[in-house]
Amino acid sequence: MNIAEKEAALVRLGQYLAGNSPELEAVKERAYLANGWFTPAFINQSIRNICQYYLDPEALQRWLGQYPAAALEREPKKVGIVVAGNIPLVGFHDWLCGFISGHHVKMKLSSKDEVLMRHILEKMAEWYPEQAQQTEIMDMLKNCDAYIATGSNNSARYFNYYFSKYPHIIRHNRTSAAILTGRENAAELEALADDVMLYFGLGCRNVTKIMVPEEYDFEPLLNALRKYDYLADHHKYKNNYDYNLALFLLNSSHYLTNGSILLHEAASLFSPLSVLHYGYYKDIQQLKADMTAEPDLQCLVGQQFTPFGQAQQPSLSDYADGVDTLAFLLEL
Image 1 (cartoon, rainbow, N blue to C red):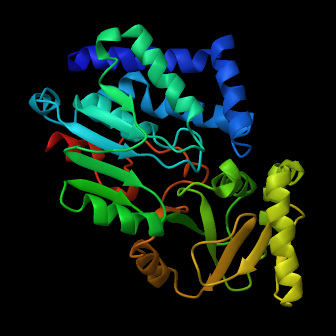
Image 2 (cartoon, helix red, strand yellow):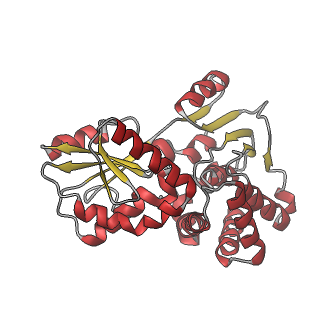
C-alpha cells in the first residue's frame, strides 16, 4: 500500500466505526462483558473521538503533511507495541502510527482492552488481505527492531530494562490537571466535568487535580459534576467511592461531595478513583510555570490552556508524553 491507499483505508475504517452496524454493536457488547469499566457510553465516546479526530480525511491529510513524503515510503522493520488497557482503544493511535509508517507491527494487547482492537485489525485484514501480516497480535514480543510500551511506573522500569538496547518509547503513569480562576461559566464547568469523569477518570488525560484561588466556591463545580451522578449506580465505581469516603471519615479528613464524587485537598496530582484532588494558589503566573514544568502532567486544562471539555479529544499530533511517535518510527 502506498500512503494514499493507507489514507483511504483509514477513512473506510472511520466510516465503518461510525456506522454502528449489528456486527460492530455485538463487538461493543462483548467488550463491555469482558471489562465492566468499558460501559457502552464510554466505548461509543472513544469511537466517536477516533472517527472525528483520527480518521477524518482532512485531519489525516493535515497530519501527514507535516512529514516528508519520502519518509512515509520506507523499508519496513519490526516494531513491538505493548498496549495499555485503561480506557477503550487507548492503543489505537500507536497502531495508527505503525500502520502509516509501513513497519511490521507486533502488538501485545492488554487483557482489559482486547476485544475492540482485535476486531478492528480483523476488519482491516478482511478488507485488505495483502496487509493482513503487517500487524500481528502476539503474546510475547521478541526479536523486534524497536519497541513502544505503555504502562505503570512499575512496569516502565521493566520495559526500560528489557528494551534498553533497542530504540524505544517507554511511557509511565501520567495524569492531567486544571487551573480554575473562579470566573468560569456554567458551560465551562460542565465541560470540565467531562474532563474529570469520562471513562471513570481512568485515562491519563483525565483531570485528577484542580488548582483554585483562595476562597473558591466549590458549589457550582459540584453541581456541574452532577451530570455524572449515574456513575454511582455502577457497582465498581460505587465500591471505590464508598471505600474512599470511609477512609476520609475514619481519618477525620475534610472532603466535599455531591454523592457521586469526592473532592479532597491534597498535594498529589494523582487522585484515587472517585476522588478529585484540589489545591489553592495565590500567584497564578507562578502556578502556570510550576504546572507546565510538572514531569507527570499529560494535559493542562484551563482558559489559557487546553479548553474545558477537550482533554479527552486529542488530535493526531497530540502525542502521548509529548513524544512524536510517527517521527520516531520514520527514523528507524
